[in-house]
Structures are given as structure tokens and as C-alpha cells.
Image 1 (cartoon, rainbow, N blue to C red):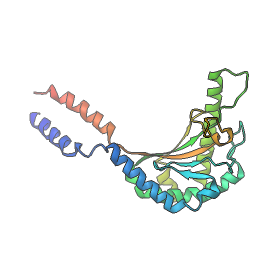
Image 2 (cartoon, rainbow, N blue to C red):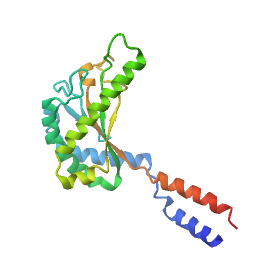
Image 3 (cartoon, rainbow, N blue to C red):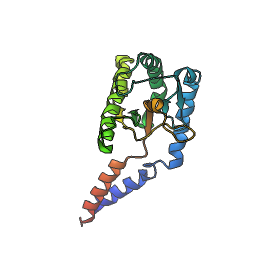
Image 4 (cartoon, rainbow, N blue to C red):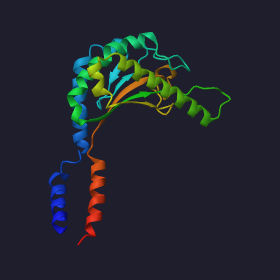
Length: 212
């Protein structure tokens, strides 16, 4: 059993240096994806009222685009047409980085508006439900833009998430832009390392330490 412990420690040591990406490595990869997305979409961003951040987040937040009506989670027709053009191309770009992508998140956001008679918790919860509906509907429509063979890969990565009114869009004076706050963002989570494997390794190592 002592030999087994030694072999296990050697195996862990042999790949532990590759288990985690540094912050700089993650940022470098994000910037690489950002440049690939900009190469594909730079000419489309103005007409879509969209932008791409250096962390490869694609945000549809422009003044000229209404994605959802106030209090509604149904996607506006103009935004559906944008998704039809955007999403298949988006998938073709990010799929090149499959091994480094842990998750693709479609975030739904709301403005802070709600009934004047609702307390703060009720406003948050109602906006959370609304934002979740928006994110889900965008995810569902996005999937409909893909061929069957493309869906197999993306469904392993794609998730929807409601953010309520926790991240508002504001103007230069710090005032909320309510129309632009009702928005959708596509975010990419990079794999930092095999955390769960490491956790299992630690548990196994702890159990072996007591073996003589």
C-alpha cells in the first residue's frame, strides 16, 4: 500500500503544475477569443447596437435596440432577427476554443422598475423571475438557429441565468438607463483548472495517509 501511495503522489505531482491557469493566462485566452469575435462581428456591432468587451462578453445594450418591452420576457421581432444572424456565427467562432470553455452563459437583465407599492425584496424577486424568463427565451430561440449536429456541442456548455436588476446600465452621471438595462449578454466562463478532480485527489490522499 505504501508503494501505491508513492505512485499516487508521483502522478499528482506530474500534472499538478498544469491543473490551474493563472489569472494572466485566463485573461490572455479571453483576449484571444475577443479578437476572434471582433474579427467576425466588428462590422455588425453598430447596426446591432452591440459591443464586445475584452473578456469576450457580447452585450446587446444599445440605444437603438429594444429587446424586451417593460415587464415582458417575449423577445422583440427585431432582436429575434439579430439572434438569427448572430448566434450560428458566434458558435462557429467559440467552438474553436472548446477545450478551454467551461460554460457559455446567456444572462437576462432587467431595469429597476416595478410597482411602487412593492417592497425591495418583492421587486428583486419579480425582476429575477422576469430576467430568468428573458434569458431562457433567448436561449431557446438561439438553439432554434442551429442545425441538429451543432446543438449537440452547444447544449453541453450553454446555460441561461437571470440577474434581476443587479447590474444596471447607467449614463455618465450615474443615472439608470432603464431601456438599455433590459438587455441580454452572452458570457464565456474559462476553465481555470480541474478543481473537482483536485478535491477528489485530496480526499484520496487523506485516506491513504493513514495506511501503513
